Image (cartoon, one colour):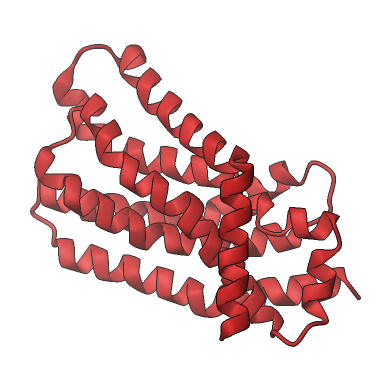
Length: 222
C-alpha cells in the first residue's frame, strides 16, 4: 500500500505544480455559470429552478477537460511503461491516478459549486446537499473517465473521442445527482433514494473501472 499512497501523492504534487488542468477546469466552470444568467435574463425564479441541473452539467463538462491528463504525461515521458512493469498491479495504478484526479479536480469543482450557485439564485438550503452529492458523484466521474483516458491514450485528437465515449456514461450520475438536490429544494421525491443510487454508481465505478482501464492499457503496450 505504500507504493499506492506514494503514487497518489506524486500525481497530486505534479497536478498542483503544473496547475494548467486544474485552472482550466475551474475557469471553464466559472465562465459557464457566469455567462448563463446573462443569456437567460434576470428571472430569478427561472434561474433557481434550473440551477442544480446547470451546476451539474457544467461540472461534468469541466471535469471532462482534464481527463486525458490522467495518463498522458506519464505516457509521453515513458513513466507509465515503467509503472506497468513494476511491482504495483496495473489496476491499483489506475485507481491511484483516478483518486489523484478526483482530489485535484473533482473536489475543487464540488467545493466551489455553492459559490457559483449564488449566481443562479440556488436555494441556500441545498448548498450542503449539492456539495455532498458532487463529492460522491465526481468519484464516479474520475474513475469512469479513466476508462476513456486509457482507451484514447496516444491517439490524435483523443479529446473529442474521449468525450463521445464518456459523456453517455455520465448520464446516470447527472440524473441522480440533480435528482438528489431537487428532492431537497422542491420535493416530494426522496433524497435518500436518489443519493443512495448515486453512491452505488460511484462505488461500482471504483470497483470496475480500474479493471476496464487496466485492460485497455495492457492492449496499448502489447
